[in-house]
Image (cartoon, rainbow, N blue to C red):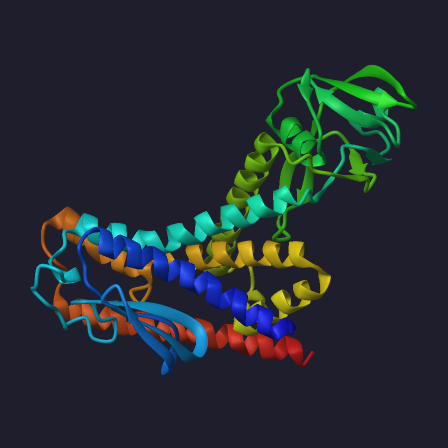
Length: 350
């Protein structure tokens, strides 16, 4: 059941990505010949809106085949008015950006749906207080609840941490202790800590840990929109930084995962509940959006580069260069997929 849900989620995310390309192409008058979920032999096909819609045997991707555009052979072009070839660079970029954009939009709505379910969020309740820290010196104690910082209302641990990072000078903390309200004044210190990638960074800290107390998010429209927006931006930023660190070598290549990891994580999430499935679906959707924007000729980002070149220099890139770079792109893409698959199998075998 878990594997079935995983493939269903993956296929759904791919469908929305390709739907973005399809709708953008139709909007600028490009004829879409085929809309396929999966690769290889076609298992199910029907024709609608002058397009052939297919479900193929290998459910590890999808594609929209537009008239005058062929990734397997960039030299194949059509000069018909409804061809991708005859559209302006800006129109082509619009079509190419629509796929990743739909992934980010879908992730937002998935997080929105999660917020409507009142997810548990970490409360700003103090756990451990580090000795000789600003919090300790100011008299902050375990089980104190921070409800405001400099008269800014605080409802979650994340809000508290972000407010401290953005603050300047001395902070005025409004706290609840044993049912009574009081103010505590302290000044954060820059201290060394680790980020999510294991790197040493300096952050403003007051020297407290979370007590682990949670509360349900109040599903008001403002809270739901804020939750969905913050989660989408955080996931996108995290993945962009992760890709950057993989390229620079700050994160080892063995951390790269493939389709087996995606299926396994989504399958595990299925056993936990629908909230976990939505969470991983949103995260994978952002992944698809980010990865497709990479400047690899076989991906949307690579095609965007070619069109930016044409837009800037008022001429198309050399056909021979485009063919060679596209072949290099496919080799690089399959190499990354192979590395991810190798890492997945290695992890499974322990």
